[in-house]
Image (cartoon, rainbow, N blue to C red):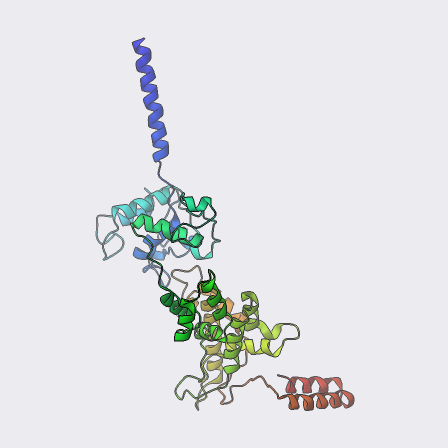
Length: 410
């Protein structure tokens, strides 16, 4: 009987031990959040981008697992012990240990890299180019929610995430600002100018529940809203009323500035806002506004001093358009790839010039007149043009009609 009890107790302890081991098992190493930061901090300066010392680069997956100058891959998937990558990180000889002539990696960092390799050295996707995953809103229990209301300090689901982090840090929401401060903030946020004293007094005496929402709607429908928020976009579009370079003379491109302001005030959909600026002239029967929108890529600097080379200027403008397009729409410093593969973003050197090919079909010259230009006419001139076009269409051949159309229209 005692023997049975002992055997049962031992088996029970084994079951509990296995269960604890299973629950305590480490999570797989995540490349993007754990491995990549270590590589960027300690390795990529000499083994990626411009330099590939020893023929080894950890910039891209195919390079990291390719054969180095030794004829063997530095990283052997599933075998950290025999990977030269790990051997060099733990070598006792300072002439052979990596990173060379720098502080060694910590034991914790080396352990992460070993685990990553032993787990198969899975190469993660760049965080900026993966689709976001749905996250559960951290809503703690509250009596207010039982009655369909938000708890104190909460006005939307985003606040729950803020509250969750506050709880973790031992912080709490600040008290709600007074009405004067609240109004000043929303005016500066949406229009860039503070409210008048009359507007402040009107808000302070307004007891309606939606008094604040009424002010927000009013500001969003104000022309000043577009004027304020367009300035951010115009900065990214490198808009300027002057040409740049040594003389920095003025130029007439303000119609594009006004187009951006109108687009913000009209709440133009972002996809349409994008298409019209990048390819408005390629739309079927483009309107004047859509043609003006394409001035996004005419914001390049223009150098009309004597002795300049037109082709050099043209290429410079093309590269500027490539760099600006990626910076504005992809939020990436694509200009780095003009000289070498990107150190942090997943772009290779060759891909830069594939993108250049899309833009390398423009006419740019170092001319004083900033040609080519769009022509715009007054209502009276438009009537005269229509009459000229009618006369040509009745008396000229189709080729002449087409030539006149190209010359007279914007």
